[in-house]
Image (cartoon, each protein chain N blue to C red):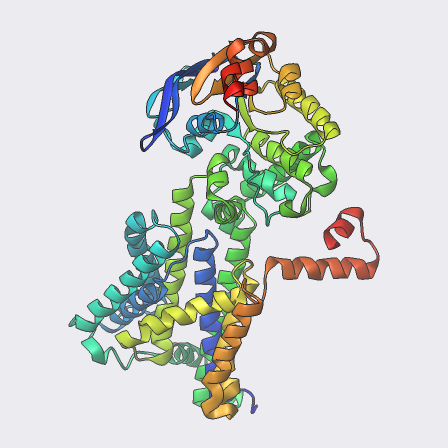
Length: 323
Length: 257
């Protein structure tokens, strides 16, 4: 099982974690809101979970849920004044909020300042303990303990990601999803359709924040150590670039972006010092030739048309569209 | 009166867009709002639908005031509109555009969508069915799954009407529904508007196509430079000296040229 070594497993785990973050930014963007507060919400989730497990001794998964919901509650308070803002103004306000959160954690006693919180339980160890309870040991699986723990973490993350994706897709294909999409396309027209814009913008903002908070909690218990610097401006740019590179029209876009941008630095290790050049070049190329991201709604439409053409069931409408 | 505007004035900063506009729309009527470009017709629509409030005056619908309500509440009360510069949700299919219109008459929210409860499924089914009926009503059954922004101009106008009808309005506001249409499309449109009225929806429309206005409307209101200059039957308004002057210019102006 060479492929399943702990290094590869860890890379995959971070890809899956970023997939959930990608969904979190996608939901916020799906109402056309450019929020840069995701690192701040992630930090709140991370510190919240860490404090709940370390100081209050709560079980890990319960702590993640509580911290994520708490993050959502705070995002509600942040959203009330800021969601009146549009476009860049909202971006600046939420970016400022993220920095405020980081500086607060940097100066609080309970968060241990710049040193951060270390020695957290890892998700892998927790799951391994449970497995041991069932009498399953690393030797039964033919792997070493580290590999089993890494694999367990990956499986947990993957299940969570699939659950989140499942629910988001359901939401997309509902009355709520249509309202999101209508607001993104044209706020005035959406209002004229009787859609309560403020409510749905807030809903999307809170869902995005809860997911970011959850990712923060998971992140803390994957790396087992967090510092305020883990949630700085670079993290915001990273999360946003999933949607910018991948595209934010369909959920597959940011998912693709997250996978690409997380895997690429690992794959490009061979390029060593030229790695960042390649990375930067890719960004420029995408912005120049695919300003809406690599995967757009049109990508799907074209794919469907090609399939139709291939099966020879092309009707008039599609022919006109194809011109 | 279904809709009544009383002493409506509107100014933007120092510029007065409308002064003392008074007219009513009776249940079951088709009322036309005419006037040269920039007269303030769309401004009236925007005030009725609460995109911005009037500076002074009162707008009542079914005897209740509309001033101060949020725009989405206006739709809830039973007023729907189309836009002069077509505002469809371009990336959605025609069918989905109409489904968005059904938003206000349905109620399943976030949790119902996540859990896909039986009642949510029933509602979605109903939404799909109603949306298809409305597309059929405006004659767009064939293009249900086509992206709205790839539709022909006339089709987009009809789709916008279908989307507005989906909110089940008592009053439908049409902002230049015939703009950019060819003769045959306009004839179809007139039949459609009559059909809408016969189904019990009152219509208030802004239009430059005088043939349409004069043939379709029970009552016409003419606005010029923010002032109401005439109100009455199409014949009365057509022969009103101020209306003729507004559209053709006065003799003095001609001499000045």
